[in-house]
Structures are given as C-alpha cells and as structure tokens.
Length: 459
Image 1 (tube, rainbow, N blue to C red):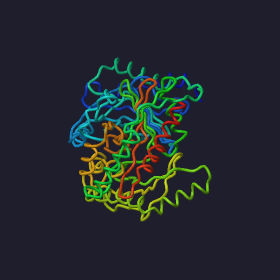
Image 2 (cartoon, one colour):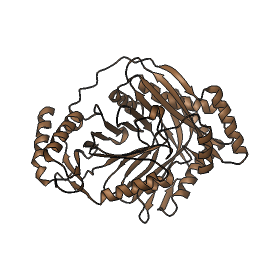
Image 3 (tube, rainbow, N blue to C red):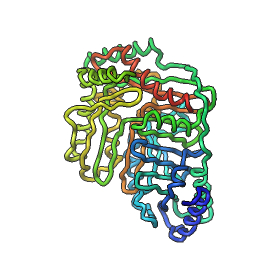
Image 4 (cartoon, rainbow, N blue to C red):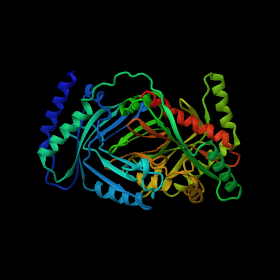
C-alpha cells in the first residue's frame, strides 16, 4: 500500500495518462472516473471554499464535491419541469469515461427550496432557489469501493482543466485532520415565532381545520443561535454523522454560507427503474430508560391522532404516484424509526416506474408532501404562505444527486441549519391536525431542534 502522498501523486499521474481520451474540442459534458485507493478515499472531507459533502453512515456511502464544472440556477413555478428538460438535454451529450471499470457513475448535486417562488432573501441570500451543480472534482465512497470523478464542460483547454482538477483533488484529499475541541456553549437568540405567537398561530390553524379548509398544515419554527467560535463544517459533519448514523447528512456550500441538514426522510430514490420512498409523519421523544422509551413508541403507534397524520402522507404519496409508479408496495402498518432524539412513524414504499417517469418528474409530483406542507396540498400551502412569519428557504425543500441516466436520490431537507461564521439559523416543524395541542407541538419542535443544537456544540 502506498503512503497517502505517494498515492496522490500516483493518481495525478493516472489523470495525466488519460488526458488523450478526453474530447477537448467536443461539446456537452465529460466525466472521467478513476479508481480511488482506500488510503486516499478515507482522507476525503468537506473542502474549504465551494463544495459539498453528503454521507449516510449506516450505508457506508459518502459523496464529496469541490469546485464547479458548471452550475445552473432556476426559480419559478415550473422550476422542476425546466430542470428536468435541462438535465435530459445534458444527459444526451454527457460522455462518461471509466477506464478502471469502477461501475461508479458521475453525478450532479440537486437542491431546491420549499417554495418555487421563494426569493431567497435575508439569511438565505446567496443561495439559489433551485441549484444543479456539477463539481469539478468529486469523490464517491461506497461499500464496494471508491472513485474520484473529474467533470468538465466542453470545449475546454487541457492545461487549464488539468490544473483545476489537480487543485480540486488536493483540496479534497490533502485536508488536515480535525483536532479535538472543547464543547462550546450556544447563546439562543430570536425565536420566530416566539412561544406566544406559536400558540396563536396553532390555534388559528386548528380553527381553519375545523372549518374544513384543510386537514393538516405543517408549521415551522426558526431559532437563531450564536457560538463561542466560528462553526466548522467538517466538525459539524462528524458530529451529525455520530449523532444520526441512520440519517442522510448533507452539507452544501455554494458560496459564503454553509447549509447543513441531517434528515431521516427520503423523498425518492430511483435506480434502474426501481423507485423507493419514505413516508414519515408522527413523532414522539426518546427516553433514557429502555422501558420508558419502548412505552413512548407503543403510545405513538397506538395514537389515533398520530396515525391519522401518518396515513395522510401515505395516501398522498399513493395518489400522487398514480400512473407513474407500478406495483407500489406499501406496508399495511407503520414501523418505528428511532433516531437519537426522537422516534417517528415510518412506512417505506417501493415500486417500478412507468413510461418516461424519472427522478425529477417523481419529485415534482411528490414535493411538498403532507409531511412538510399539509393536506390537501394547495389550501394548506396557501395558509402557510399567508401566516408563517418567515420564508423557509431550503428548509423542507429537497437535495440529493442525479446521474446521466436520470437516476438518483433526493432527501427532504429537515433538521436544518444555515451557518455563517459564529451564527446559525435552525429550523424545525410540527404537523397540525385535529386534536393537536399547542404545548405538545412546541415540545416536538424543541426535540427536533435539539438534535442540531447538540451537533453545533461540537462544531
């Protein structure tokens, strides 16, 4: 086995050796995939500057990107329709070179906000409403092996591209190790809405439900905190991965701001025609004692209010996917999904896509689900636009990746934080249905916020 620095130089020599295979004067996109030695794969981490990191510890899978081969930014009511048309056009002229036969596909990062008309102002300024990001250099670690992917928009200058790839590779792999830090104290700042305004908003929402305007609306909270030092993205990722090994962790930094999420909810995954989805709704806290924790889980499974909230999500997914997914398999009863700070009702779904359905058409049909917006969708979203005291930005939007086959995976952006220096904005929400209690829903959001707060103390 080569020492890491020797392995890095060997990889750079491999990159130079394959330069003649790249159609520098062509058009479209080109990706060169090279096998990444284990000793280098383990070094890859969130780079300084523009980049992203997405990891699923329980699945032993990590994706990291640095720099930009191309970025596309969209907004508006038809954003996902236009994004789908754009991706189909790109895929038709996207060359993928895999001389080491890794079987690992190149992929672009996708992220979009909760609302298609969100102007992304205030704290969200600088982040796009909808983003498609093909990194200049990416690392993909899987249980079967790892690869480094060099992406390029054609035509291109070979010398400039090789220099940019070398710099990107060093940014990803020559990352100094994270040193231990003392646990930091966080100072809580503005709560929006505050406790009194939350209770008024929830009572107004319950009144609208009783009037028959909608059955469910998901209300969101924002909490601002300040740390004792600037928050570090790599430390935050390590803390989130440790605290939430069964969640998908995402850290995305297109510019100055860093967005972080640790989400248990997959919006949709599509691979070789097979779609997988999660229905998650209904929440209760965890308990330190196993017997008390088990009792809370049993009460959650038996709660008519929580089961109704969950069944709305399952029903909506089934309805939205009609004609797009065949032979949809749905568990007859929900299971418990236990995270470190809360437990949820969870129903996995799977089926085979029909016709020309792809990842983005499925996402457009599903988002936002009743788990993050409400049901029925339009009257609930109209209520939220009129009554929530802030715009959500990427919170309850979705992010993930897609490849040249238009396969990929998108996750609902939950348990989120937007970070800049020593300041952070945290987001959490709770579903309101008939029978909801303001104090209980406030406690649920506090439990959800505590997960990110715990991670930030180590960042």
